[in-house]
Image 1 (tube, one colour):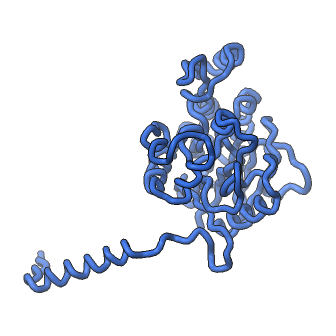
Image 2: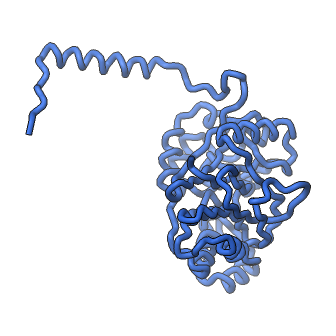
Image 3: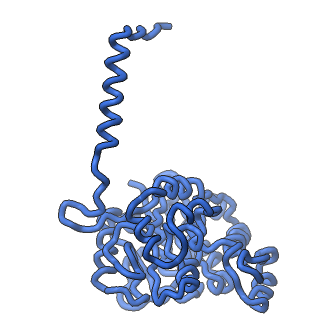
Length: 326
């Protein structure tokens, strides 16, 4: 076994000097631009490897051109934002992903769109999509509801489901898994992950609604941090996945937590938190953050519930996407 020669004292001092020069260069470097060379927005997203050759991507509030209550990267077209801003944000995301994004008109149903046909022509009411195509990204809007993303890495079949309370009760997850198996997926091979959503401590509902949800999904209700009763849509989704034969579930929380920590001093996020009237400063919010995937707690995400608590008139929408990792 050979041994690497030890540097002399002079060499060591030289190496230390080079290291300091590199560190000083980093410290003196300008902040990363939020615009590309053409002045177009650069979306801030969180990619997560779901399975070999397949990834999911969560958009954040950062890196777009929307303003006011919708700042910055609003991707939803229903909330009252400037349509040109939404279009610019979607185009920027499409450039970043380097493929078309397929979207549907979500209505809290169990309907599944066959995205092998590409983008629907005209209005398409559905709350899930499946595809075998590697040249598309399937997207689901969310701002408290739960996106569930699924893939069979052997066959390449991918799916995504919008799982709000009503969609879960309607059976959107088993409908999505069935649509995937109809295209060659095997539930025992499907890998799933649960995206950003309002957590079990924050999703406050009335007692009658909680009772009905608990009856449908035993154990998926409990005390709310604000008082009263809350429901756990993530727990309900896991029940549905397991009932459909999907047991391999990847936890998105570690990667999202790391990304949140990385952005804890981001000036754009700090500015958003100082202007959105949805809570205290960024540092205070992150100090109190317990669940990085909770849309109400984490200021990285849009949250309809958080906006309502702040008496805002509008709120943006994020996208959770699944696509081939080519």
